[in-house]
Length: 79
Image 1 (spheres, rainbow, N blue to C red):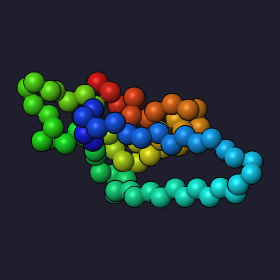
Image 2 (image 1 turned 90 degrees about the vertical axis):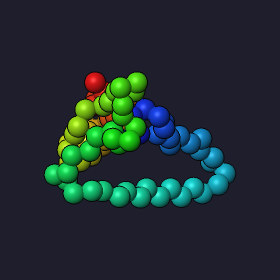
Image 3 (image 1 turned 135 degrees about the vertical axis):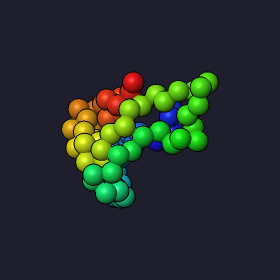
Image 4 (image 1 turned 45 degrees about the horizontal axis):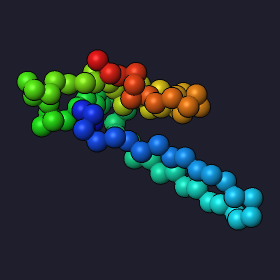
């Protein structure tokens, strides 16, 4: 996690009835039991952690739930 320094892109499209469209979603995942948190190099006294630790499996489960609702899962781990 970049501790809010870099923003994650949100995929949005405008469909075109005249052209065929192909989308690919690729995922890379860590060990489901591993905890993720803001990178230690991006956290200091002037910029404290903005997000709490979370297990990969919990974050991924939330990701699919929030995508279907049009919300961002990262907001659920903000401190």
